[in-house]
Amino acid sequence: MLELRNVSKTYRSIPAVEDVSFLLKEGEVLGYLGPNGSGKSTTVKMVIGMIRPTKGEVLFDGREIHHDLAQYRSQLGYVPEEAQVYTHLSGLEYLQLIGRLRGMREGPLEDKARTLLQLLSLEAAQYSPMSGYSKGMKQRVLIAAALLHDPRLLVFDEPLSGLDAVTSRLFKDLLVVLAEEGKAILYISHVMEVVERVCDRVIVLAKGKVVADAAPRELTQLMELPTLESVFAQLVKQTDTMTVARDVVDTMKVLHD
Ligand SMILES: Nc1ncnc2c1ncn2[C@@H]1O[C@H](COP(=O)(O)OP(=O)(O)OP(=O)(O)O)[C@@H](O)[C@H]1O
Image 1: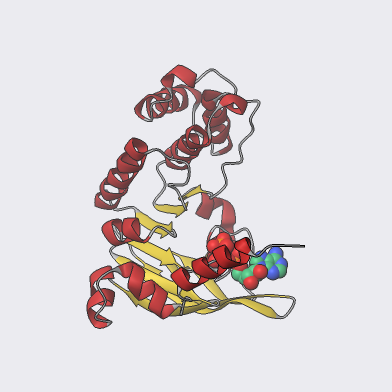
Image 2: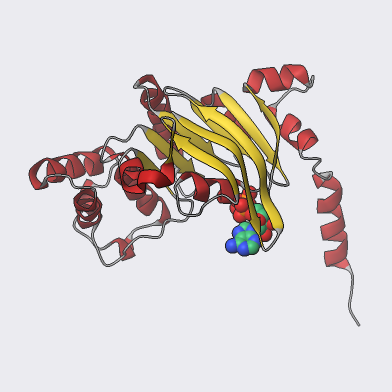
């Protein structure tokens, strides 16, 4: 369904993403991991068609996405990392706006928007301006907006940020059901434990390059490490975080004249 073929992106001749290739099939949840600055957001921007690769191609059903971006976007649902929404609108108005932009008919759109808001525990707040919503409430509206037009491909960029324990659990179950329904899901996250649980496959990125592409269990077995978190630390050559934490506290304690 979604294919990245030797995709690279450079910003003023500095590489942010280098030669990334992967295929995401229907019914598959692909985790996309990497430390800060490794190129995850740059990859996402290319996948959603916001920026073009410097080299390589992003294909959907075998067609380059920029050939017909509007058609591609009608098949794409995207939840961004930052919940930036038109805060003067209510949750219901926001979903109606998004649905209209996607060409949905008014009647079914309103029904669907109301039902999704109710299922995501936003019924009581549906008429209130989103300026008064918490981060997690805005995040839930964005999740509803991404699902509204029943897209085939879903891109979730750190979707759990700001969600409470109950909503996080609902979201993880939602991922399972969406995959069962044949949706292709690209899941960008730092939360290793969630990726381990919900993803069929993980790609680990370090300094813009793919350093691993395998099932979470294969990765831990291959590297003889107990958890995906330890594999990740090894692959991206993370510094010993406890040593750094001690150094930070030691530095804190230095007295000034
Ligand atoms: N618009 C830009 N102009 C110049 N350099 C950029 C731009 N956007 C990203 N970069 C650089 O590209 C590299 C990859 O950044 P990117 O935001 O894709 O990483 P990331 O993995 O999403 O990081 P994080 O986890 O912190 O969000 C970084 O070195 C960053 O400084």
